Image 1 (cartoon, helix red, strand yellow):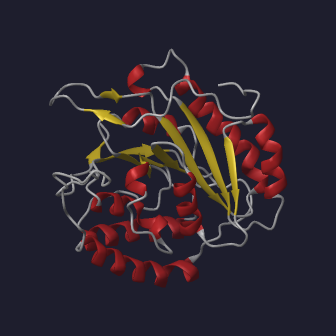
Image 2 (cartoon, helix red, strand yellow):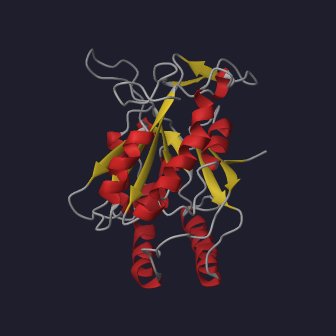
Image 3 (cartoon, one colour):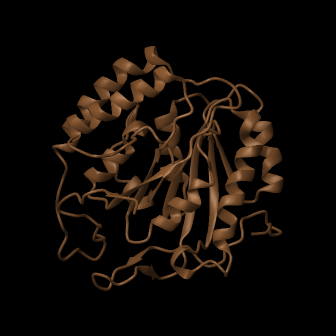
Length: 298
């Protein structure tokens, strides 16, 4: 992928829409043009790591856009929507400099800090792709895993990563392990790592999710609530190379418990319907009558 005179990313093909599923056992192929992917990344005071982050995303996704990539997993292009969540460091200047070398970058700057969930929602609405990927900006997520998730995606509505080997303090690992067990017990699910931000899912599903402060920790359960066909694969996790985490036990524990109770209520009260004959101005939405089970990587 090379820059063009207008400073926009090169599109190998126009953005795509959905998988074509002709019959059970038949390999899924794209129906319509090759798909376009939007990578949504909320960032707060992560200026030092942004050049490496963009370089690793480009290295992971640009090879998927070339003609030699199989049609089944080829990208028609991608964009990186980096939402500056009221940073007070050099993030605005760094993003302006990075736009010169990375035409895929689309910075969105918020006037004030609104939190990771709200900044993520801003990215969902700004996205132009039919598919959305998410990452954290602290470089603990490995952007190379986006290619693995994308190649696992055919036939699914979403692929969620789970961190095989956490590079955090032992106390955070223990808390995370028990938090995942508690979430699954309360919600009746088998998501291995709801806190992992490495995900890819359909944008139309993202726009239907009930979003609230703290919802970024429950995107997997909320996708299942919408009836998404979800797969899970192991992903890499790295030590944080710069700065310090914005979260700790004090600012997460009580809120997460309250949020879990709220999500449990939401999971039990979804709207289920199918439009059989829409009127001339009413589109027929893609809605399923029941959630499908999650699948592990083979």
